[in-house]
Length: 55
Image 1 (cartoon, rainbow, N blue to C red):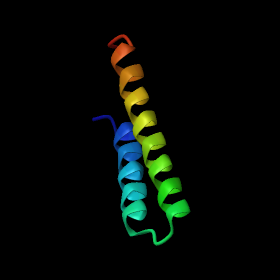
Image 2: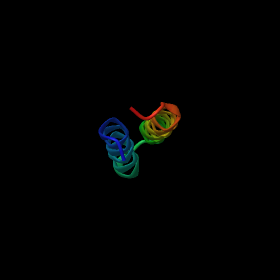
Image 3: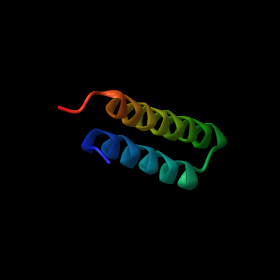
């Protein structure tokens, strides 16, 4: 996994852990949305890297 995608995936995992430990539903939902956002960014980054021509 490229470094940038790995960093984004780690951030997604961090937000997922925060969601699991959040005590109120609003924070829990916010952290879940942030985790989904970072997972999406990581996936996009992997797709862009895959589509780039090899140098």
